[in-house]
Image (spheres, protein in one colour):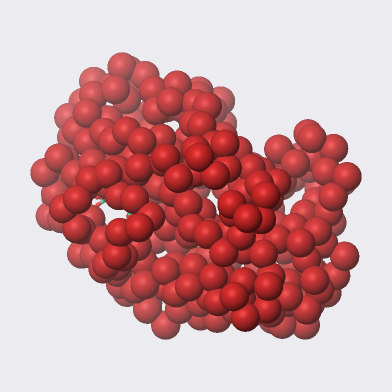
Length: 312
Ligand code: UD2
């Protein structure tokens, strides 16, 4: 049994990781400032985790949280491309300063490995598809820059201090518990909840933008594999975590019409600043080095997610 520290445990991804680790008999400690995370997300596991309410930019709190931890799964962040366009300083504080703090604390506590939630946004709008890790990043939004800076810090901490680090570039993660209520929420959480209420979803742009939407279970699997893969293959490395298939928003809307029984129309409004047109991952590096294989495809993930929101 190992002790895992999850930063951002109150978030949709952090809380999903916690549940998966507990079900495997592992010990879980979590830290969250509950700015975007929700205590509801961990309500059912509260008695089985060591939960600490603190900010990752608080170095003392991070030192205390890292003490005795074997692995750190660093998920805490202020996500959202448009939010970072409005508030680049806030994005930088949480996503860059916060990440350096986590790394310093993990290094000092001599944790075995840090796995980091990086983002597909680092690839930017370069025309080459699929995106592979050897491509030169070309971030557009402040969020994408901050997430990429975090990656570079991970690699630096491996090279300078031999702290084993793995950066996982998540591609548009979705699934149960993703917050649908903020203007910055992920598009699938918003569409599903809006359509289940019989209301009209809004597409920014023409709806022909595409994403490699990745169901949460695949991301959980990627994290677990990243902790266990031999250092020679994983430490100091960056991996895409995705499904290797892309769908447009217009296609997604059609699929959701069937799953939610929504009969209404779509509303189209102007494209969002900082957006990327197409996103698709090459996942061969994660397959070869980590043994990663997406377990749940897009349609099945969508079905499970709709069912979950229907039940809430
Ligand atoms: C980016 C990253 C993703 C993750 C995320 C964190 C890319 C390709 N992906 O997601 O990996 O880091 O940031 O926030 O950079 N949209 C609508 N209607 C809505 C909401 C969104 O049309 O009500 C559009 C939006 O303009 C975009 C697409 O849906 O074209 C996806 O938007 P999103 O906010 O769900 O995720 P995205 O791609 O910014």
